[in-house]
Length: 95
Image (tube, rainbow, N blue to C red):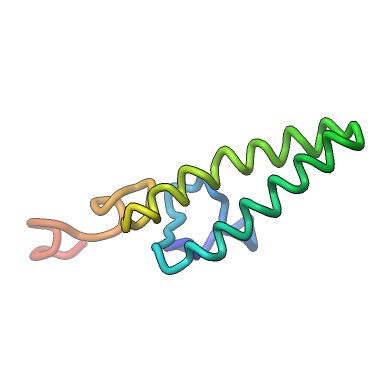
């Protein structure tokens, strides 16, 4: 789980960044992260901490589709192949 380009403002990759890329080999880490996030949401509900619930629900809403993509055996990268590689004539001519 790492960004293709280093981010100038964040130490950890943002799940919504178009440069964020991850592969199916990280499925176990995503499953753990989702379980932990769901636990925080439930604890937040029990303690009446709506901020915890809202922030962690937003994270869960980003994690689950990524996991679904990885379980399909595909790479998650919002920019797609064209955004991360040279294709066609670009490969021949370089940048």
